[in-house]
Image (cartoon, rainbow, N blue to C red):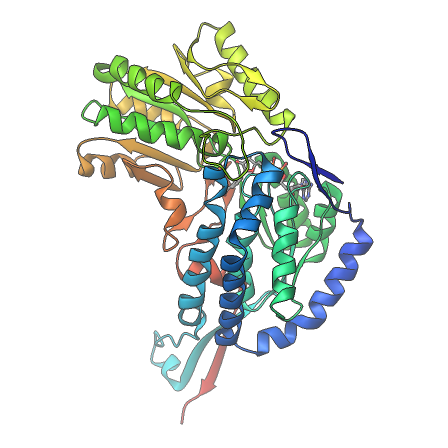
Length: 457
Ligand code: NAD
């Protein structure tokens, strides 16, 4: 499969489209190596993770080049991937031994006191991780670090659109001399299906449509899975908010990575008294953004869309909105795979730009009468990934958060939950099943629990 930079169409790599037989061979080797990996203990596994982290540090600039070349991102957007991976490696290396330690619960009845009770966390031997294209280096790290520390062997199937960063990660794992318990197998959907069929736990990140297919396959085989799926994240801007700050935060939250983030701001509900000021500020800030891609330079804020298909979805959502009476305040046009950062107003809640995931650099804005209307419309979605609330009253923000049907809420900020690994990151409703990170649960999900009773005395 050819890999091309979507910003200029240049070929930047080639990888094999592996058939199921190659997946089976990799699975055999991983299973053979897993028992020793589990037996070596979590502290030794953490040392390997830290050596891999050092490799990431040593190769940061080159890896960022790879991320940029296969996604069409700007340097600004690509630069977050290696540091975030390093931070996550530290989090798990520091905490995994505590999270995986045996538990010794107190017996709940007199009869139980005749035994010592132990809960043990033992890994699923082989975890399959299937990833999308938007954060090609980070996505595999997000899940592989915890699964490896849990004691599992890991097989990653990266997106066919951006496989090169994951292949680099596997090279790094081999380069540090780590045991052969981490492999990357490239390919398309059929390769992913072969992975789903042959592993003991499936960790999937991608679209809701694919997530449903994987859930069905896992259901039939009784293979446990965790699904991190699409989103349509609302932002609620209350009349008491700092308007400039809310507009800046929403511009960033909606446009970082050209809007190609699962927790991008995808629709904005603004209370009537500040609606006009908010739209003016947002438009002014978005108009200033510079679009392009220039290798290691920092001259651009917004890069290309990763694929022409993705650009076409954005174009359709904007065109449908305009056909039904929405107005474009800025942006609205495509050149190649670049879609201009776009602010839409006079938007109705039933338009496709509000009901479907866009995954692009558009910010549709809707005026609402009050907090209740904003909460009702925010919750009126099949998705439930995350949300932001912008207000001068933090307590009120927290109160609104508890009314929202989503897996995470950031008050006066965008993406804050994504970099706080002590919190769980997972979607409700059509946005997924399960969560990543979030303390002990984020690593124990890769383990089977075992109960042991031992006679006392
Ligand atoms: P996608 O579902 O098209 O593909 C994701 C991966 O699944 C790819 O590697 C693909 O080859 C593989 N695949 C496709 N069909 C498969 C099948 N039947 N069986 C097994 N594997 C299969 O998603 P995408 O377009 O690459 O990514 C964009 C989507 O990912 C968006 O919806 C976005 O919201 C979502 N996403 C979610 C999160 C999150 O944490 N919730 C994070 C990033 C992206």
